[in-house]
Image 1 (tube, rainbow, N blue to C red):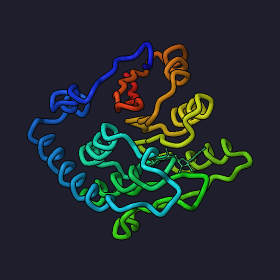
Image 2 (image 1 turned 90 degrees about the vertical axis):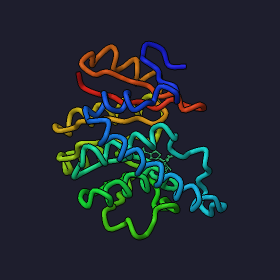
Image 3 (image 1 turned 135 degrees about the vertical axis):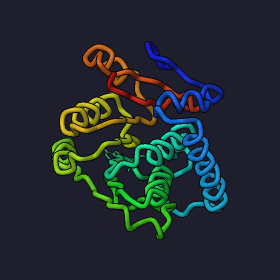
Image 4 (image 1 turned 60 degrees about the vertical axis):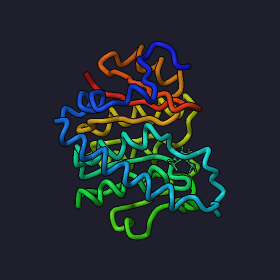
Length: 221
Ligand SMILES: C[S@@+](CC[C@H](N)C(=O)[O-])C[C@H]1O[C@@H](n2cnc3c(N)ncnc32)[C@H](O)[C@@H]1O
C-alpha cells in the first residue's frame, strides 16, 4: 500500500468527492456520472468476447481511474489530452467516447508498439492520433512530443510503471505542458510518490485503491 498519501477506496468515490475535485454542481456531476454508467455498460458488453491481441485484461485501466478520466473530460472539456500506454485500449476508448460526447477535442496516445487499440471503436478514431516512441532515445522523443503539443491540459500515464520511467514522465509533463490541469497515473509507484513529496511539495496526490493496484490524481495546489 502506498505510503505518505491520502488513499480513497471505492466507497469514497462519492458525488461529494467528484464535486470537490471538479468544482461543479451536483446536477452537472449527476448527468456526467449517468453518462459514464451508460458507457461502461455498453463497453463491458462489447468487450465480453475473448481478445485477439496479446494484451490481457490485467493491463486494463482500473475502474476508478476509468470513471475519473471519463468525468474529467466531460466536465473540463479539454481540447488536447495526452495518454501514454494504449495496450488493448480501455483508457483510449473511454477518453475518446467522452471527447465524442463533448463534440470537441482530440486524444494523443503514445506507445512503444503499433499493435495496440484492439478495443478502440472505429467510429471514435477521427479524434485519435497514435504515436510510436522509438526504442532509442525514448525519453528525448517523449519530451519532444510534449513540447510539440504543449496545449494539452490532461495527461494520463498508463505505460511503463517503473519508478524511473514514471518520474521521467512526470518531470517532462510539468516542464513542458504549461497549461496542465490534471495529471493522472495508473499504477502509481512509491518511487514517484516519494519523488513528488520530496521535490514538488506544491503538488497534492490523491490515490485510488483499485483493488489490485493504485491509481493517482496529481493536482497542483
Ligand atoms: C498497462 S498497459 C496500458 C493499458 C491501457 N491504458 C488500457 O487501459 O487498456 C501498458 C502499455 O504501455 C506500453 N508501454 C510500455 N512502455 C512504454 C513507454 N515507455 N512509453 C509508452 N508506452 C509504453 C505497452 O506497450 C502497453 O501498450
